Amino acid sequence: MPLPMPKDLTSTVLRTDFSDDAAWSAVQAAIDAADGSPHATCVSDPRFDGATVQALIEEEAATAEDGRLTYLFLADATTMADPSCPLLAVDLYDEPGRTCRVPARWYPDVSANLSIANMDFADFADAADDSGAFRGWGDD
Image (cartoon, rainbow, N blue to C red):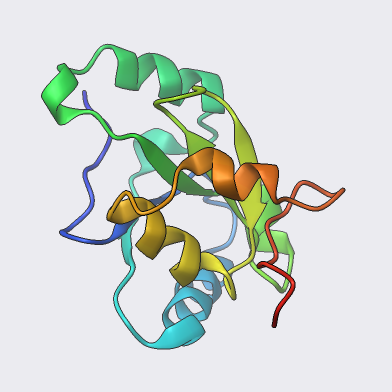
């Protein structure tokens, strides 16, 4: 079964931790509050509970090429536990499995640029700090 596709000009945010519904609601609220524009297609499907990056890569590789995602964001246990809601961005195209964290505050910038192919996944992953999180370009 293919991974869920995002709505036009948004990115897929896939819930992989189902331990706390209130935390999931808080993650969605943080994404929406970041700039008020729709940047996320949030997917809460229990079949992805506990899904690993590798399992998602394998699932996507089995999908017809014209239906594949090039990246997605995971709302995992780390996302749910941290007040900054750091989503796990996953490259599914250039370097499948490469990841970086994207706190909700930075999610709209990353999502918008990836959804229109203005920037590549590596641009953000390469700019991640020592903790592996993208926190902007240092001018904010």
